[in-house]
Length: 202
Image (cartoon, rainbow, N blue to C red; front, side):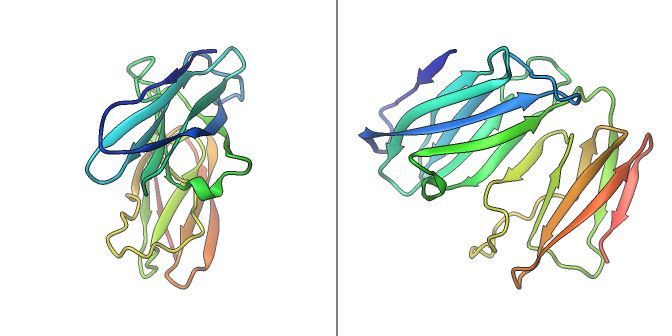
């Protein structure tokens, strides 16, 4: 398995003695492992950005990235299929990651599923009179934005609420989660068929 360590002489400082491990698995719509998918870990302190590590999934769909822990307060995110293996393959980005979430310096992101976007329908979420501070989808979603710390209400009023228009795979059940300002977490199953879907929160 390829494990790369990419350190640049930028403004982010690292603790060379403390190593972090990010791992997970990538599958297709049928649950079969996808090999050769590029996954990267990225850090930013607001001024500088580093791609600190990357890997390609093995024959079982697993990836593993080992890299030095940043000493700065940084924004951390993982890009999945950040360099497309085909023109139509979906992508995901895991955001809102904190080193404090690690157990024994390791975070396991579980399984992320990708699909071929050539067969897709649209899903539009109408918030109506509901005013969520976060929206997230679990399922086969193109360009999905996965919040690794979803239940936490953002303190920053400029926190970007996820968009409400999605491209998704047909013939699936998508889990919609939304978080309200009072911290209450709500979940809804949305049945996706072969046609575009408009779903209204009530």
